[in-house]
Image 1 (cartoon, rainbow, N blue to C red):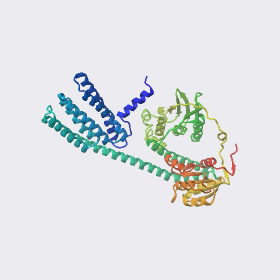
Image 2: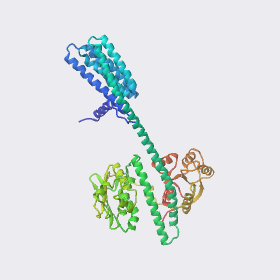
Image 3: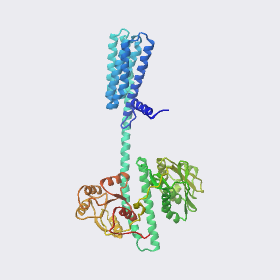
Image 4: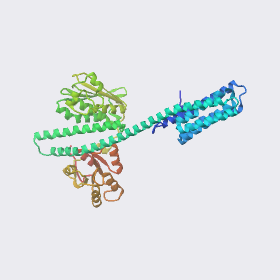
Length: 577
């Protein structure tokens, strides 16, 4: 049995002679591994050769034995130079100094097998070429040639012709290797260029998606807000139906935008999975309630079957689980014309098994093989009839795999489908409920609250004003960061709603100034109202000092919920129980 200490020691030795590091630029990591690994191999070979001479030659020279031990240590210590300095030139020069000295010692002390020692001198030029470059390599080849010529004059056993022949072999080998090395360097440069282009394209794609998301969400916020305001007015049944259709279309458009952004974040490894406790049945019933309207509109039954052994509380990522289940239930409703959609939750060993069964159009074997691919649906006819990006199931597959599970489908044409997935099951105890958690009805009226809205879009100004005034809030409206600071210097507000992209001073800069300069609104709650809601963007808002972020388009009830968490209404009223 191995202990943790022995495993740690083994890993340290392995990393010493075969360093593990990110390959941040070209083939530097590979060159470092070659240097350290070759040093270790030379050290082992030198030690074994030393032992061989000691056991086969009774007249073994003590001086040679002692020097050989020093050289063995020199080989083993060479990687330390690289680990400490990260200098390939310094490390290579140290290795070659040991290598040259060791080879010359063997040539002069073991002249009976001189050919065996001089052939080792082919190594330094080749190694220098691989680790440093061709100029240093040719310089090393010249040093080796001079070394051979000097040895020929000093050693009777080494004819000058043999030394020159060895030098010629080294030169010939270097010509071929130089040509090959130049081609590798060209390929390396091209790979680096392609990598930089790919990284630049990825940044540009992210910037494009962020910009397009903002440009689409801004007018969509106007459309959604107008429809919400219309829904609160007196209308005929026909008008209510038209408004409901418009709101449904807006939600569909938001789903498409979110799918594209989600897939982009997953592809860029920008999605992290959380593990937090949550109530299992509460999440599942919430999904059922959210999808019940769509099911009712198509006259479908929506049922939930939760096995008795499903824990009441589990630790997982509730947001991502909700996203996957909602997508599967939404698809089942979308592709069903009659019958029922059933959400089935059970325990299978150490896994939570979730399945969504429908009685819809079903899938062929070919379609089942393609349905989790990005931008694909079962067929082009399906895409024309039902619409969508074809990203929902692909995103679900990526998220399930990120959570450590797997996803699949069982289906047959015109016999319905059962989409299922599993995730690791971690049962936890219910957290202790605090008094604040126990009573949290949504506040719907904020009479007497003073709010400053910083928004440059006229349509959005009108919508936010109408939302706030309908909740009893007194509203001041400005279009940019500088006039917002002027208002904040002159008047105390209970809440500031801050747009991010403004014409002159953006919302982040205005927030930073408010938070860092003493004044009547230094600690006033600030909520970002923005169409830029990528994780890195919302994090920057919070880092600047904002308290929350509402992504456009937002609903009136979402605004009320955020206000209820941040603002103490002076004449607050709650909905009747």
